Image (cartoon, rainbow, N blue to C red):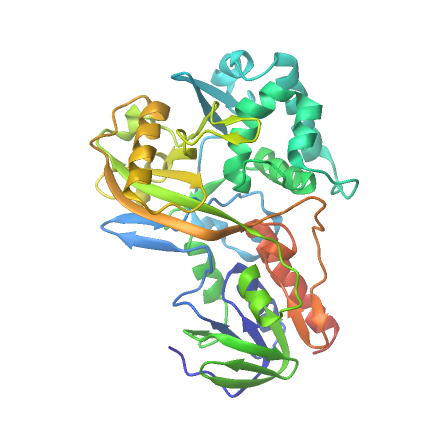
Amino acid sequence: MSTIPKSSDVVIIGAGLAGLAAARRLAIAGRDVCVIDAGDAAGGRVRTDRVDGLLLDRGFQLYNPSYTEGASVLDLNSLDIKSFSPGVIVSIDGRAYKMADPKREPTWAVDSLLAPVGKISAKLKFARYALGLVLSKTSSNTYDQRTDAFLRAKFGTKLTEQLLRPFLAGVFLEGELATSKRFFDITLKSFVSGTPGVPREGMQAIPTQLAAQLPQGSINFGVTATAVAQTMVRTDQGDIRTRSVVIATNARSAAILIPSLKVPASNSVTTWYHLADCSGSELTDGKSTLVVDGKKFNGTHNDPSRPLVNTVVMSNNAPSYASQKRTLISSSALGVHHSVEAELQVRSHLASLYGVPTGGWAHVATYPIPDALPMMSAPHDIAQDVRLSQGVYICGDYRQVSSIDGALASGRRAAEALMTDDL
């Protein structure tokens, strides 16, 4: 628990990525910044636990080197991003089909074209669309719609149901694909532009690096904000006088502080970690390739006997995640699941997806995360106003796009608005 200051130029509530980005920008400009956070470390939802020589991110999270905002505030060489394979393995009826851009995975070209997940013409049409997004210089601000409706109309039902929906359900953390098509375009463009991965020392290395850029003593942990006004923030540790406030909490906490604030619903996820009793070279060709089940969905119907939306061998591309050359598997399902029965069902699904017995796999940890990702329903404004009222600003991925880059950009925008207002 920190001893909070009595006053500060700016009080930032929340030490997640958006709050840290705002604090960084304001500190560079010479503002006296006080960051408060109810948790015990920086990062918000981006946290990593170290358990018995393992790195366990709290939920399956990735960083994409193509993120423009991240490139401007992070030392990517120091993070040493371990990129996953630029593709996905689709499991259908016990067979594993490798799908990827042939330019990036040439040996997968035939498998990608012949996989029974839609017509070749539909796959080529999707590839052309993705490439067009990368070549486009402008963002899509035209008519917005549900991703589901767009994909079905543009690329057909089979490609949508057996490849795109199973994959995107794990990205958006919702299987109906009611997510904004604008956000889908941003996401797809980032996947084509860069290959996501994880920092060598886990996802928490990202907020740790940002926090290290702030003046010593700027962040106060174990402090909960209870009320906000332009010139004062009330906390459970006392009041802080200030000239301006930046609310950088998650959506649910922001709505508690500002009851009139409209915030999106949160999508939930549960991530399980297992140690396999086989070598990583025996799974997914020794690579960290995301595996999805092509038969998990029938339209929007979610097959409960196939709980997982994705699974990946973390240690294949990031050996630092498991010491002593152990094989660490990360697997995720939509929703919040606590029970032993759920883990057993996950283990059964893993056996089907990897084609190996999983009875001897050691269950390491389970992370049920109710507020994993803000829902980006269509139509979605990708750059909502950061000004709430005189001297009160707001930021967070739910105010822009629900990604690491969205959180960082939102924090910067709030800081720049504050400086423009000279508060």
